[in-house]
Length: 402
Image (cartoon, rainbow, N blue to C red; front, side, top):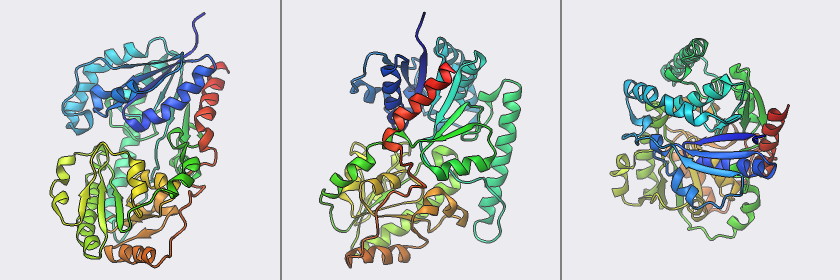
């Protein structure tokens, strides 16, 4: 009798980092796990990273063998994306054959093809939600009202469109909404995210175990604190807003970076910008020419950059959680962002600054020896995160055998 098999499509390195511990734990219990690189669609370096991994018996990997999309899927206009989905759907459905479950890292169009195929055979479907999420939108007045209205309309239009697409079997061909695709289970990184998703009104069962790629944070914080950071270095971790169809927030981030690129060096701070791997690096070319500003090379590990910094600044990036785990103080900087953005998980749990002057005032406290606590809030980071890979694997096994 063939053994049970689970498919893990991986669109980027974060998803791979979450899939690997779960796949290894499943293999140890006799469940086959297959890691499918989606580099041909997203160009995120999953396949090269897998080549360096030592995988146990029962864990296999392969690339999706289709012509590479150029530009990558997320950088294409809607009609071009639709054509790509239609053209590649038969191959993706074929790749889902023989699997009893599919565990995704995001519920994009291609993942929805795999979900639809596995679900049609009564298989198990799950999402390991890699990062934080905004609460359901509501209409507001005052600063950010226009963005709030756009976000409210987009949220409800996409939710209705996705529901209609699912009802007629066309869910891969309509715009998606994160975590709203029909699933059996969603695994979250902390209680805040779980509550936010529950408030969205989704029917999917939610489990809070933490995300496996952050499992080493609690164990590594002590050693990271022994790494000698460079005094005066501030790391800004950018977010790929345009990749996620958020051009307004992308413009907000650019305005904040432009302001910080002038204010921090003028005050004696060295600004290092960590570009999100899914962003277009060319748009930061002018920023790199500014005195006192450095754009980090793409091949430097994030953990090394965090350890070298005296402080970390971001608007939404999960790098904030990693920085806290590595013992560095973090500020959520939202100078140009709408007020509603502070309701994001990180803004709700961490200190927020709303201007370059306010951030400089906070950084000045570091020079005076007033180091803020660098601890992982339990609301953000589930205490079970170090065991999350095993816990998620056990949850999948129970679903497959129950």
